[in-house]
Length: 350
Image (spheres, helix red, strand yellow):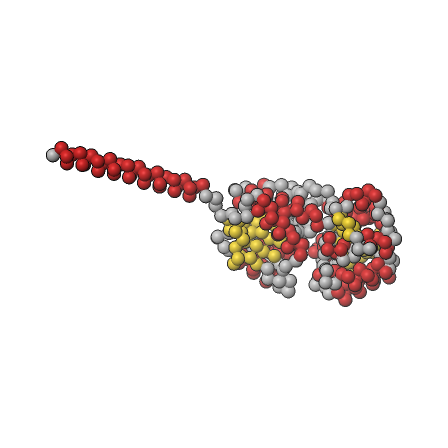
């Protein structure tokens, strides 16, 4: 009987060792599962593709990669909506609702003023929303103030005083007397032409505004050219290229030639590409990196549990300036050394 008892003892020992190893394996597997980073599903919404939005979105993804979050943030293919610029605001709201009724998204990134407005109309008050590439969130009525979005699941980025600072620089550089503004006669027209900022700077610096407010929504090159001709006839010596499809890269070259032939200095609201196309001065797209960095940090904090409304929205960065020396020579404008020294981009096509 003793050999049999010894055999049973050995079997018991082997069994205990096996059980111990199994527990170790299961424990290790559970620890690995718990430590594996969670993936987050993110939706995307915009009215239509636009080059400034493309730059901002690219900068956001680059910053997520720098932070090691590019593998954790999944931009879901069937939650990526960009219906096109020919889609009405009513149709835009329908597409917004398709995103808002979903329960599988951890966050929605929305680009542009009109798309953000449509998304907020259908806001489920649950899914976090990060809005980017908005010209003026406060004037658009999308946020309550520069310090409060007014909606718990919504936040954005605000570059306060950007346009007043830029128009001060524009006037310091050119010292014009009559600044031409083209706009549609509605809220978006005022925002995309920076009307409030130009009015403030005009009061501060003592120049006149000459306003053409009969532009139609979605106006093409011919209508925009007509508006410019009307302003030239009224004696403008400076002009703001508004945020409008009629003044985009596909249409602006001929309009700029016409303005410069009349010795009208030009300011580009939408930055570097339009300055490269011939505008005298504009906002440089160099600060896109700052926008990308801040938006990535906001996204990460939201995905980690922060309430969007609690996040600071103000982006503190100095004006980024782009100058075109060839256009300056055509217009007889001489940039000061101080202006050249602070410019982020200097375009030389002489």
